[in-house]
Image 1 (tube, rainbow over the protein chains, first blue to last red):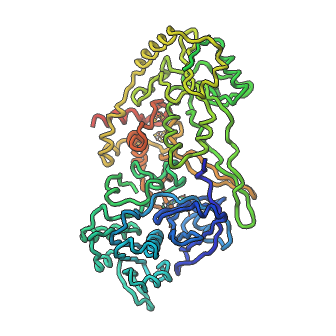
Image 2: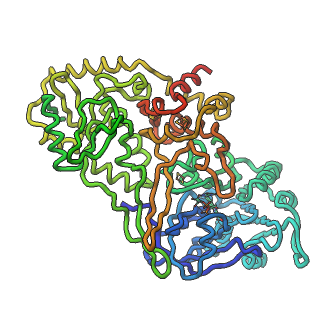
Image 3: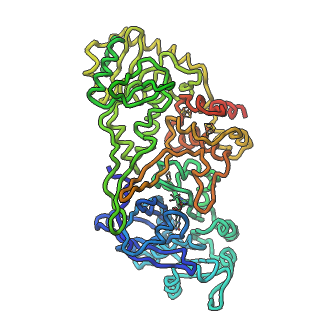
Length: 279
Length: 341
Ligand SMILES: Cc1cc2nc3c(=O)[nH]c(=O)nc-3n(C[C@H](O)[C@H](O)[C@H](O)COP(=O)(O)OP(=O)(O)OC[C@H]3O[C@@H](n4cnc5c(N)ncnc54)[C@H](O)[C@@H]3O)c2cc1C
Ligand code: SF4
Ligand code: SF4
Ligand code: FES
């Protein structure tokens, strides 16, 4: 019987400090055993438990795309015990990963549709996975127009800066990066994510919006998409609840009769409407 | 199905023989309590008791259990093996029917298609459950018949004993149970014994005086996550968690790491939805901000969510929470009150 509590051994291959405040880093992890790498089949939107013996575990969205081979990436904000340890780590450290866990962005449902990706702050991680997946040569034609709206409080807090520049060069991707407030060097857009969504006004025609960000951003962004006539079935988001086991056993992360770790974290607004409002 | 009749006075001998061959867990007297414990030399398993203070789930899902061990190496800690507390062949003797049903209810959670909990499943597979019917339901707080059980329910039992007065009727219900046949002699049970059991079962079910509308309230629960009634339930609650720790079907746990010098272990401990920290995130955000939300969760989990997830109600009507709550919050009364709304 496979033991879902035992982490897969990985080694920290690369650490990238994403933001000026240095409290968000991306960790590139490589599998210690080839077989584990082959078995670790994931879909954008899934997460994993980053496992540090002696400290504990934290559920973190997978930030890389399955089209990137040889490693998996996680972007982590320093918060408490485990995430602080991760931030102190050096390249070459051995640690563990349990996963992939949870459902995923509904790839099959997204296929053949125009996709609007809306992200705020560092909750952009699994959206980045989705974007890299969709724009990969093998997959791009399976999706219609792709519009990305991504915002952070200031330019220094944008994550994946190099990648954002690469994406801007592409003509098969409409990318809109915004900051609440720019600085002297910022030449891009200024304004809150909801306002930018209203300006960009993506059509709801055959379109799905995939939205992830801090609660306050979500709260003000949703009405924009309702005004644009997106149905609740076509607005998809990802929930966060405190977790431990990640496999629907420890009883910690339920929203009504769904365990966010196992049945989520991805839900459409229509699905959320049917659940209790306790998250 | 094999059935045997055994004289009452030989039961203690049978229990002793089993204890000589495998681990035997049975009710024993410990100070003022009757507890399920591993029977070691010099400890006598009780043959007459009402029910145990602790729920026997602890033998499959211990209060604290080592999941794995690890040791420090140059580049970080490395896995060295699973916990060592895995039990050998075990017989749990004297389980009451409500508690035997709790195993079946917990199996649905720990033994699912997608994720299997090897720690629970292995102990469960290695354990034979010998249940003893409640010919005389032990407490006024019992309400098993309201939640699909009965004082003579054999669900979850591998061997089922019924006290017929002079002797016990032993029914061997599963392959696991039949492996114990050799201890029980060859006196086959006759039709008379079975008839007597039927009569006793019917009388026993009538002895359960307390009924609650456990199924009837489901529709109300489905519709009333928000309702002023929830403001009234938790007022006295101390958030001590006793109710959940006593409960044979509660399964929430926490996972923690413990390190001593170079060696560490990852442990899981029982946790409780009644504790404020249970759902508190590092950011400080807590979806359940007060005891109101926590009590609603406990009640909803048992009578609504578990039903939606797996089918059965996650309460076997043992009454432990009713008896042990320090401020006398009574889950039965909550169900009744809801049915009157
Ligand atoms: C599906 C999902 C995806 C996530 N993705 C990311 C991500 O990509 N990047 C990122 O930085 N953060 C992410 N988080 C939040 C992250 O899990 C918490 O910040 C982290 O667990 C805090 O752990 P800690 O040990 O540092 O803090 P401590 O306060 O020491 O936490 C103790 C333990 O509580 C649990 N816990 C505490 N807060 C949370 C929380 N908000 N969510 C889940 N479990 C929690 C964890 O098991 C944690 O180890 C995600 C959460 C979920 C549920
Ligand atoms: S909720 Fe109370 S009565 Fe029901 S099984 Fe648990 S402890 Fe027993
Ligand atoms: S035992 Fe009683 S006081 Fe303690 S948490 Fe349960 S309901 Fe509250
Ligand atoms: S994290 Fe344990 S049930 Fe979801």
